[in-house]
Image (cartoon, rainbow, N blue to C red; front, side):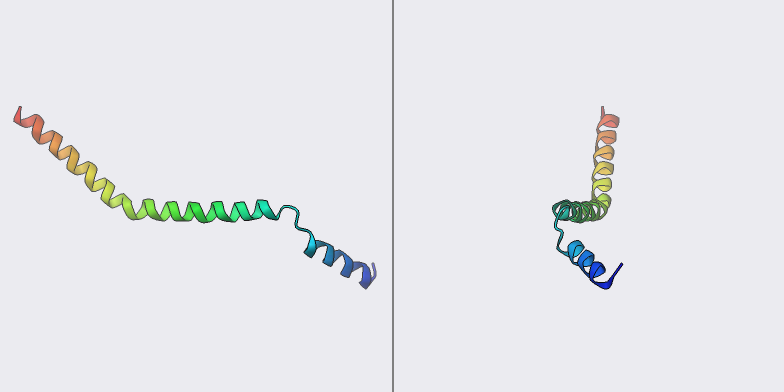
Amino acid sequence: MTVTTIVRQIRAVLTDERGLETLEYAVFAAAFLVIVAGAVTLMSADISAAYTDIGNFISSQGAAM
């Protein structure tokens, strides 16, 4: 292979935009998953406390009957 052939192949790879949209969607999906996972992690303590409070309320109402 000559240097000219190598340079042509490198240029062809750099200017080829096929599959770029798929890559953009993959990056967007990964970022979305990171954001959702972070939100769930931040809210998990509050959700757990809410279910505990609801369970305690139901238990106290059942004991009062």
